[in-house]
Image (cartoon, rainbow, N blue to C red; front, side, top):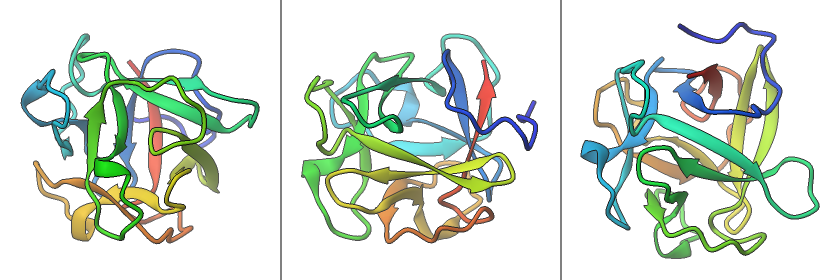
Length: 159
């Protein structure tokens, strides 16, 4: 079940992050609990306690700055090796609890109930490799497209 177009406010509870281009959910490869496991998209499972559930916790004093915690592993979404390069992969890592690093995501509204997540460290946005619609396509960062209908657009769907 997808969120209504008006539901763009940051969630206060557990959500699925649905890619605005593919309609698939962001999750962690094979439901892994390992540090460094890759973030990827997959057909939404719509099951409680899955690797596709996420909590957004405000961090620091910036109203739209969040740590994104995976429900299954309790680890945080970040960029591998804190890279600032286009194409750097999104992974899960031990939550640092520090403000404004590669695990800090700035939520930016795109309209139509969609948002993009800009990585604080790199200034690049979370998207899906090559705009793929395939199950298993990897999440990565790239220059922000700032478009509501791109692989960098995300929709909140309550779990």
